[in-house]
Image 1 (cartoon, rainbow over the protein chains, first blue to last red):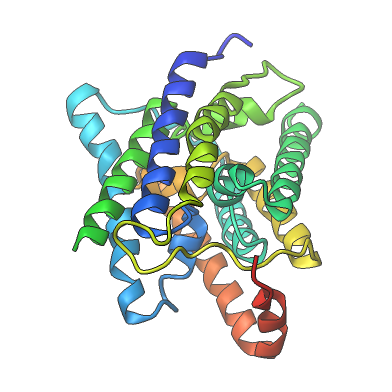
Image 2: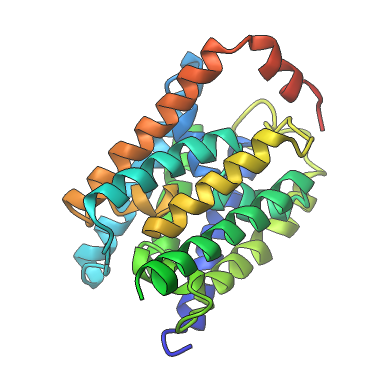
Length: 140
Length: 151
């Protein structure tokens, strides 16, 4: 556990929690990123602008952080074919399963939704197995 | 307009949270998923921190008739654990494990990660579009039945 960063992780988690709390109290919306993005093309006219507004904040915040405190590290080691396969699976899977780490993992778990608890256990398990296979079986 | 400002503020907080917690870094996330390696439990702390805030918020919001800037609360309507949920979560988990990106961090790092991040996001949006295409082609009654029951 040499890379464990409990303090910054907890702090970042609190900020993510504040984001989800604000979006619920102010707008009555779940802060699920895959849903906010995935429903953008099919959303009704009055339902589009807040999604774009949220996504703008999500994209601009790390850039603001970079300007003030230095560029955050983004280490992306996967090859192009793996990036494409992973992207397709993440996009299709989150829409089919009705949520991702934020919608199911944070908001759904906080609502004690049975669907979200099951989904979170399953995507975590699939992630554990995938990394195990890629790093310790294929990669070794 | 208040609705757009609150959404923007929520997006900024979310993006800052992902940055501060290093979840914007796929290698950090893969460190959490690598339980057989040099395991990094940080992601669990991120979820814990978020749940500490969100769980009481949802309970307290139950006392409100409506959100502050919108007409109604829009909770998810599906309640059943069905095959779509199971299959979708498993496929997502495999993709997450292959790269270390889920949708939030991928989009948050679009201005920082460079071409490889853009490639992942393009594929992710393609995957979402494929799903939208399939669900449009399938009988709408299937989708309606699954989302018809209110909480």
